[in-house]
Length: 466
Ligand SMILES: Cc1cc2nc3c(=O)[nH]c(=O)nc-3n(C[C@H](O)[C@H](O)[C@H](O)COP(=O)(O)OP(=O)(O)OC[C@H]3O[C@@H](n4cnc5c(N)ncnc54)[C@H](O)[C@@H]3O)c2cc1C
Image (cartoon, rainbow, N blue to C red):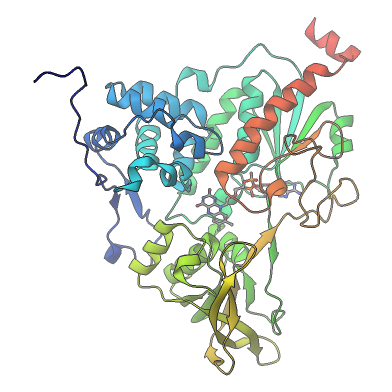
């Protein structure tokens, strides 16, 4: 019996697994753990599993709206270069981003409902690692001679700089510390090599993006100084770098430190002796990074998290790797006091927790079990509960929310309370993810470009354009 319907292709429900450094080879080194796909056939086979949904949930789930279907279709059609161009044109540091993205697209993938979702991230990573960027990555529209100051060089600042430079604007990035933002000083080397990130940032110089390092916005210069120097707009992308500590007795003791400070010091190669034993408080990716880094530094460390595995906010892969590396995670446990010898930490008092009804976050609320307290000997307590934007030096110049994030004109706008000054990334949203900062930047650039076009040219602009 003949039929007009196309024959049903039987697709595997199981993903082609990317390669990982074997656990026994991890030990006390910072070698990359996820090695991705290592040959093209793996990538093609994985892309073939895509159902080409009419309503691509993967694309809708990505905060930037990255066109996953376009990339996968090009692979299915056998055009790897075209697929790579889709990725490499879209992200300003694609190989870095494709190592650390939480891949909301994969969580939404329909194939994942009855098997493994398409491993979109590792497909993207293979393309960005193995194919050069297209000419369009470097192409700039006719120069506008408008100068834009971008403050901060994390994913938000870099994306804004790249997109603004492509529109023909003259962009300078101002960075007070290390280029790359949290990707350089937070995310450890075994997840993202700094050399790779820095090579990708260096490449942006081909679009005439300039870098000014060492001075701090708010302290050493203000937005008013920048306007006086001839900048037409300012983009603030300073992230969320101020540690938030758990408010328990003993938090002020020497040896009670914050994860982002610890990770920054390790990343910058500073001397970081935290003793023999440490606990890390928290259940997010920052806690996981801190515990895995401290283990690699030879410290006997473990996580304490007040809820259960089910509620843990860290990404599944990171939790899996932590368990695989045999790092203890003490679920349903919370510190109540940090104990010291009058100067530095010697012990921590912990209490066991139980879960009740869901709280405002939708997760079951933990509460202490009376009489379950116990004491653990430690040299260091690493707080990884949260961080917030470091806005102390700009507090008088801008309107801020009670979470110390910048307010914007309205929900769809990135313009701050000061005309011509825009804010993107963690400094607006609070600590989130790189892809969300990238999404902000891409949207803000459209608003900034409109803002610049709406400005009446001043005489000096007219003179420059003649
Ligand atoms: C340990 C850790 C692990 C993480 N892991 C992941 C992950 O795996 N995947 C993921 O997507 N996200 C991850 N995140 C979150 C992600 O790094 C951030 O969401 C993202 O970097 C935010 O980008 P941003 O551009 O807003 O700010 P940032 O990347 O924080 O960059 C801000 C930059 O501004 C600079 N700056 C700050 N203040 C000033 C000033 N006054 N003057 C001049 N410069 C200034 C800083 O030095 C920094 O370079 C992680 C975060 C941490 C802390």
